[in-house]
Length: 310
Length: 234
Image (cartoon, rainbow over all chains, first blue to last red):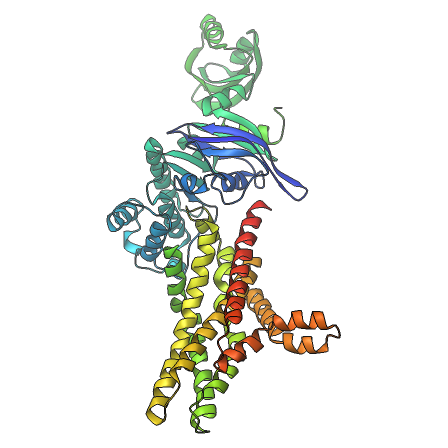
């Protein structure tokens, strides 16, 4: 649906994007991660045709954004980092303006009312945008992107300025949109990406630092596995029983969780769950819980961004 | 294109700008009309039209200042440039909205003419010809203001620079008179808006003057279009 091929962009001496390529298939929700200034917004601006790239090309459903801009742009709904709102207009007038600007061919009043309903904007539809709170403005921006039901939605930090309840609402909405739209979503909020996206592209210093399915990234980010373990018994004794197992790199004790039970975090080179349960079975201790813990997206993000991985 | 035109025109009247500009135009027109026609007892509006040249210098920057600068400042240009509309259509829509505001201002001459028709016999040919002349020259000033507005994010800077450009244009005759080389003198004075406009005000409609103002308008609209497109490539 979206193909980004060898895109580079330079601002004066600063290389903002350096040979970026990725692809988003129909129906995917792609999370776009990276620190400030990494090139996330630049990439989104290039995909939507707001700015051009120095080399490479962007195809939206087969239409090149620079060569066939009208066809390509009519397939995209874009919510930029700062929603493009005319503060002196009412929500309704603004959406009607954007509806005409995008040359949408759906029944106008019905379509706008439906979007307002979906985003809980009906109550404020006659109010002036400039008087609305940030959360409402953000939703008006999203409403604008959804006009005409474009197959591709590009959302630059959609949950900025929303309260926790609205963030959950927004997540559900994006997940819902992902069922029949192709979505690219950038965010600093890692749990949000984890909760919503199928795939991730991590970008750092204008280059792609990692990309793939979330599970892949979480798995391939490290060559070790982590399990969480709760064992009933004496702390010292458990420690020494675990130490003899082949493949374990580190055992860290997290203290007593319930009476007589201790929690451990075990980092190992291979899957040691069988060996652990056998070793404990030989003693008179009991395994209360054993769970593959994995690394959090935060760990991997920080590791990749700080350049430890490559 | 129609959507942008309609929004821009409406936004002149949801902000004070549209009212202030039309009111100022009408106030000055009223003063000139009273002093130079009613008070002196003549039905010739030539001097009224000639005086309005300077009012245009001030008012047109107010019409054009926000057209692109404000969009850039509020980032609404992202909505325009990522919608399936070409840059040329955006430029034309904004130009036309400013031109229509100017045409609304020009309606005050119809009122002048009606008043004169009670007390004398105005020459409607000259009045309508002059309104067309103001519209033509106004188009050129608007196109110049539009280009300047596309160069900056600040509405105030756009207004000040357009005003400076207009004043410079109004001084072209004076500048020409100080140039010692004849060939250069004739080039500079041929660019003068004022001498062409004054001949309109006297009732002389010359084809070359019409072509001149139309060319300037098209040239600056084209430059604006290139300017906006170029920024995307920068």
